[in-house]
Image (cartoon, rainbow, N blue to C red; front, side, top):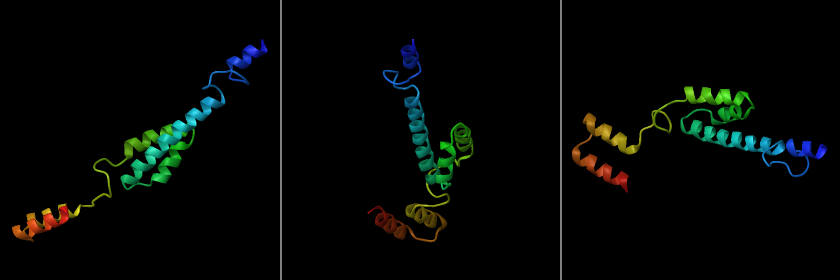
Length: 113
């Protein structure tokens, strides 16, 4: 009978691979992958990625912080907020009339190279 109990609860021997220690390692890996994804996403949105990754890794509370992060994260395009590409700046200058059509064409071609 003791052998049966060991088998059922993932004791020494031939238990189910995702029971006991195996299950803990599985969930730790899941939390680490989620934390890495949150870290990358937060950094790309100009937020503190390391802080959010650490908060997501914390057991039990991490799920709560993951939900909070998803709710409050900045929406919109990734990258530094308010940052325009050089081509967007040239388009903006042309739209304002700061540069001529010829200058716009030349600058656009130079930037596309």
